[in-house]
Length: 157
Image (tube, rainbow, N blue to C red; front, side, top):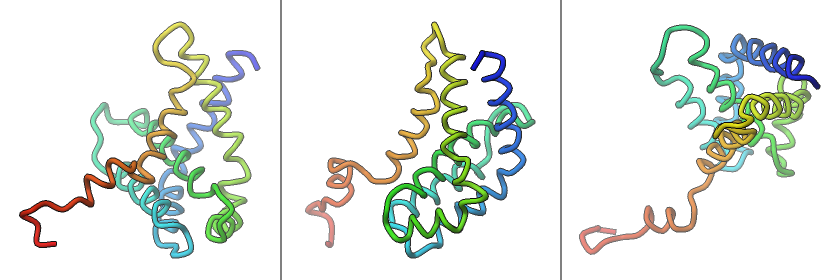
């Protein structure tokens, strides 16, 4: 795929998903409310929704929401991963709308962002790092968990 073709595919998908962002957030809200999904997956979906609807800095217009497209797609990818009954049912429920094209979308984003970042500090990891950040929200590390769960002498618990 040439640079122009990669750019065209990227811009088409981002434009499409900017328009569907409210509907995609509704799907993530469905994940938050789905008792069959694991708790950490529901928390990831909730944190993505909250991040997206909070006020954002920047110039008015659609460009300030492009990162939200990436976060929402990465979160939808995480929600649909796995072989648990909840994940399988969620993928089947929203397959036609989301999951049939999601792998292709993620590849288009990664390919284009990788081409944009050649020779600079930004690289093909730009989109992957947003997926990693979304993953890190999923479950605190053992150290973070122990810090949050530890009690002190002053604690009544």
